[in-house]
Length: 420
Image 1 (cartoon, rainbow, N blue to C red):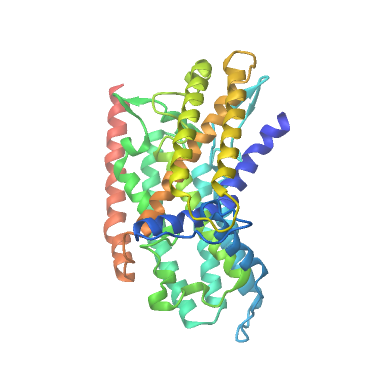
Image 2 (image 1 turned 30 degrees about the vertical axis):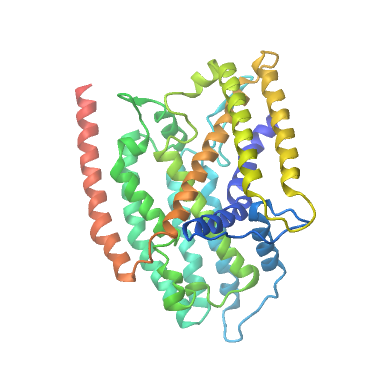
């Protein structure tokens, strides 16, 4: 049990970063299709199993893995050309290491931290590796010896410099508010209430929230801040000369960076793994009631999903009835989950701490995928900003606004502490 709890945060880090990339690609295509009033991916299948279009994402990944590696003949610095995608990928992946997925779990007087890297310097770690990611882009653009790649690298450099400052200053106001740099302590702070409103970061610091979300889009090169890879202007920017898995690493790094930014937004501004008005202690003390509510929700949600699926999943590729297969799996899994949860709800088991930990994992996951939806929604709603518009927003608007916000936050915090 001890080994499982120690390795669990690392496993979750891999799942939330690497394993969710096919799901994020699927979400990207499905949400884009919804916004553009079309079907989206629905034809790629394995023996009739389409998984709602996820098989298309798996097929794309397999294509990149087995695609022939191509080395442009004009590239002189092959080492830097090859290592650039790895820098971008590893920097994005390592930012996930300090995200707390649940509250600390105490079993047999031993405290287990639900972070892959249990450090108190969570915010500083994130900023350090988020900033290092741009070195992969710069190095890839320079080593490619391509004018479009160099232009993309220059744009990315200027964009990161401009928005990294505003991002850091927005976090400074949050550090003043919370009085700590520990991400787990920030989540614990948000379990309180501000009058009758949850004391989430988005409530306490709405300006800092907006600034950080905008800068997160820019840091991850997500539209409308994707001038560094603008196809209509510079072909594909910094990764113009990359193909196969070298391009795949850049591609995956962008989605991992998006997921890491979303995880930090959830942690600092949206209460993290906490539910409104319910702390970890409240959940543990009322665990049986919570389980019965989860059981009721599982039954209702399964019924609604099955009804929706039978209505919409009518596109048959082969003789296999895909809907029946899904129905059997969902009903079986729901019955099994209800039996397990009922076992604990009846008081036979004594695992309320572990049960609350799993519940907090689920809460964090739901919030994180909501942020993924927002990232994709914005991409397919707003047009790409021009390079000069991007720089003007970063330096002329967000930077002064973040400085003013720090000044106001400091005055309020000092006034409140002096009054107490």
